[in-house]
Image 1 (cartoon, rainbow, N blue to C red):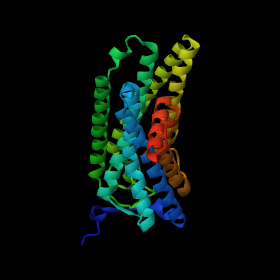
Image 2 (image 1 turned 90 degrees about the vertical axis):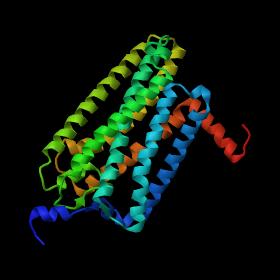
Image 3 (image 1 turned 45 degrees about the vertical axis):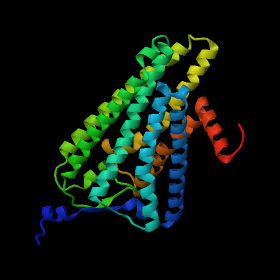
Image 4 (image 1 turned 30 degrees about the vertical axis):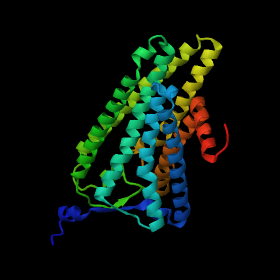
Length: 317
């Protein structure tokens, strides 16, 4: 058997998730937390989707976008927490290249669909407040569905290209400093040149983030300016809805985007503990918090969810 670097690298098809080893002492606690967060998030998301699906008065663009957002959260949730819990409970800290690429695909798809959906939701709120008379013409349910499909297709293509570019690499190292697998921590382990991968990733990431942030910022500012000119009641209602979106997006941006961008921008060397804690906590917060925000702060959703919960436990309205 040849011992050349290329031959050795071809044989590396399994990787070690160092983060799982680092939290070995707390693996049962972390596993229980992961399962609890998974089940709670899944339950809240399911209730939101069910309420929007069954209540005709909620089948309008704003709630459809919320529904799409939480369905995407369910997808990201299922891509992250179950495997983390299983790995911790079984003591397994390895992952195959195929499994790594699949998990990378799912988590990245979740992240980018979330980002673009927040962007469209900001634009939707701007239209609702700034052009109320034309809103139902400009943003119909069919338009909402077409936009959502376009977001999904575009991001499936972009993430697929990134995964395929990574799959062609050969690897010389096996240690991934994380509790889950994603492309940005996999690429540095490659033996061969990753210039194309880096250029593709940085170009699309920075252009998408900058573009989305510009649209979101513009829509939020314009919406606030318009709200200041409305009556007190109308202004309070519009600002409450806007602040719900701002809060949800801010949590997403501060957590998940930081986790992703710190790899892309090479923000210096950090300790092993920080390298593991940031993705673990950041991803967990990004996936779990936003459904709770929409379920609690959106009055129509909150009332319908409570009504359905009362039916489940057998209490009268």
